[in-house]
Length: 185
Image 1 (cartoon, rainbow, N blue to C red):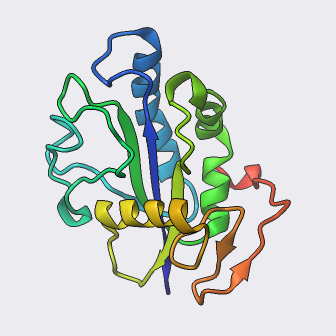
Image 2: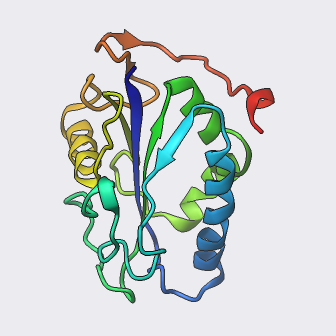
Image 3: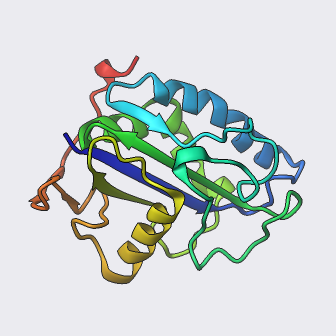
């Protein structure tokens, strides 16, 4: 059975090392959000650094998720002092589960504040694609799909909630979809 891969990428207004309150709020909320999402029905896995998050995204060992990569439009730093990005890579059973996890609870609260933390880049901040059972997507896969989405729009290869596709490549509609809050733990 295919799984749904999700790559998210955002350019922060300030480097992760910035000691300001806004940067700390984003960083501190991340752990609680990840913990809650990992309990959500349909969640399978996410890229986590094998070496316990010591260093920048670029320096970490991501194991089977591959070498960390960023889209070509990311023009900020790559050192501990200058890295200004947030990125995730995860696997889901289906679109419905991902939608419910993203648009409810703590993650929804964070989405409501995204413009406090992230720059408006004119690029999509996320992309989905289907992978075969047992396949672990890589950071390079996510970047490639996000750039494809930006350059060519939604397709079975790279899509969004609003223009989504089935594992067989057929367009599917989730228009009017409302989070099923009662399913969130």
